[in-house]
Image (cartoon, rainbow, N blue to C red; front, side):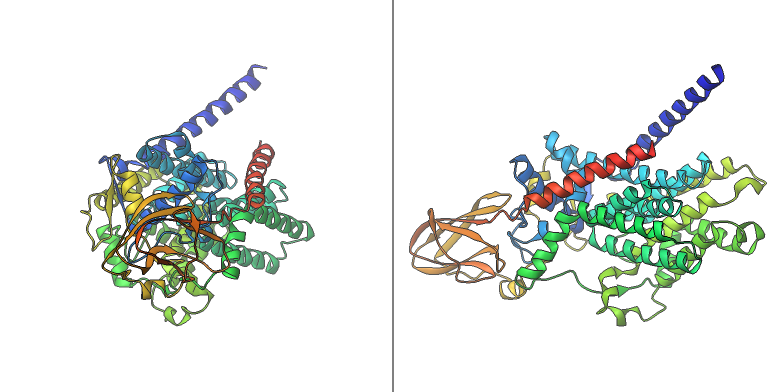
Length: 549
């Protein structure tokens, strides 16, 4: 009985220790970005924080967010009413949205958002590696590499590509779910379904990349004759779970493509990294926003060592071999040594930058590290792991801290977010022109109204915008708000219904005098699909946790 008690006690202590370490690492990840008392944000970051602000406002008013965002600042790049909430899934951004529903200070909510995002990344990576090895030193080594490498912090704090960061966070569970399904573990259905569904709720490009990976993974299993009917059934079931979880987000996107006026989509490209620039970036530990992006010299050296070890018998007979080779192949493909740009008008053009493949490269390296047979090392593995982990963290923190200290300017498109300016700067700063109806930006670089007409924005909600217009004579007035065909809008002039004479922007024929113009979209919230996705997330998470236990 005493032996059993010791085992139970030691297991509880281990769980407690690992849980504490996860929280500590997630909190530690915040230091490079927030230690100066501000957050140095990029244009990408403002794009995401603005769309979350629109969602938060709707939820605070007990509404399901509209497909259209009216908190976007009018600028040369974008206008209120743009379909950002429809085209860029927001449910996956729950780590930033939920804290704001309980925390009144938005800057504190931002810190909590990044903390929970890093926590999610660490937990998912830890779960994957724990399924591959019982060696906790290797589990934590791989987790540290995945969380603290340069590429991850470039995504988090340099580019502030929050959608991509959620893709990065969920990707380890995609592989974990596949591994569990091929082991005959039913919980893999729910793990794979949850991770793919949340990719659909976070970042569509990451979802498409994950689908490509699954296809290649399963083709490899077919070639090795390691697939059967039960595995196929599990994969189909996992796909259905993923569809249920992402139903709301995917439906909004499909609806916009089917019904709306043609709109601007993100540019196509297949841009690789220049080899010389990449080497220079490695040795200077630069973590700037522009290409090339790397995962840091320490992780590159780990990859190089693992690659050299491929020629030894120890690794040739190891399960880590295929993961090292896969990482190396992707690494080579990220460079512009091939004429990739000729493929920019193909589906591959959606990737834009081949540097995005770094997410998979790092993940493959981490898996190879976890599977590497450490028992034959002559030097203490614990000493090696501790030293390399500290080097990785130190280099990443150093590079990321330099980004935090960049002086914001128009040329680098950065601005500092503080506790005092959060709401104002997030809702008034310029954004991208993505998803604006085509032709609007070209035709309306400046809204040219008669000189004797003036207007000002007097109010904005999550699905409406209000203007005060003063005309000294009868005139056609164009207001900085976009419209989409086949969607219902309520436009009122001093409380009376009025129609726009333009189907892309609000353009009204107004008499001389003062006018209160209110533009409101129909809710377009699809409540049933929203409830379906939300319940599916909760039930799938619950089932996955129960089966794991």
